[in-house]
Image (cartoon, helix red, strand yellow):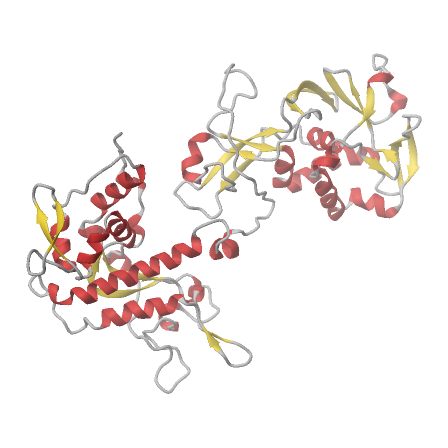
Length: 488
């Protein structure tokens, strides 16, 4: 099987600084933290206020810098793939073993000392002619593609990006003990090696003389890369846990689950397009919390509770008749205040309570007339139409209260899907919502305010609730979704 990777799939140039980048930055070049005999940060150091901005400022969390390596080294990811593809390459790069190019094998083979060559410069001169052996491993194919397409000079590093000081700052606690992030020592190690090349003029003839320093710089760059990736990688790593798990106002967090791509009728209202994301009713309600509260009040609460008194029209559970009942202030406030409605929404999010009747001070909130095909809220049993049969009356549940209240919003509001942490281009995109309540939902008509709406997702309490989120499969790659618990 041939792997036809595209170069555009890889963003290795994120670490490769150009003159356009560096002209806007000031390099870091000094190892010491403070200026001599002073408590001021070294002007050219890792904590410089001139380079990164004043302590506590926004700039200090946003300004990048760089270390001039004086010599080009491989991109750390390319170097990592190269040396894990064949351990012998690293031995030659380090100058620990000699190799000679075999034109038949089109690869380096071990040789005795004095034959062939060794060191960083020798290996880089030979790399273009090396054709590494392929096998049936997809991982090896991936590595070989990466090496072949990203070991050219434009992907090599001569300037090492330094993250903002505010993300790794120097601090002193109340007892006067200083501390700093361990990444700073890794930057210093690379800087110290690079500084040894300050007064050396490099050329094709002389670059081999600094092979050992160049190799150590390469290893230092890889160490930095591995350190940062270690903070980012995995579901419970430091950066993702501290900054990647931020809450979003009126947002929800869901596990990615597969979407159903089957289409049997293009005119069907549940025919989903690439623009749709399937989301559970409760998650949708939470994502538009202000609208949800408004709709609950307009459709139901305002017709049941009197805002100027404690009286409310409720249904007696024994007689199944609407009565005017005095409601305690605390219970009344749970329906007429924002905090109360927020708590009520939380109740609707509990699976074991969703099918339960909505109770207010021991009474049903209201009834539904449900003949199997048409569902109509009944706010007053004294005004029942003649065609309504009492056998079809039942109390409204929490989930139905929510579904009916939002029934005219399902094609109105849009959202943003965001992968936390965002790992690829396309990890944030706008979407339409398709609201799903339960498996095998009911197809019925709902009559509310003399308006009839046909729905295909009315809750079916005999089936499991849908509490996940299913993006269209076209977006899975950008989201990094492989159905192993990734959340968006």
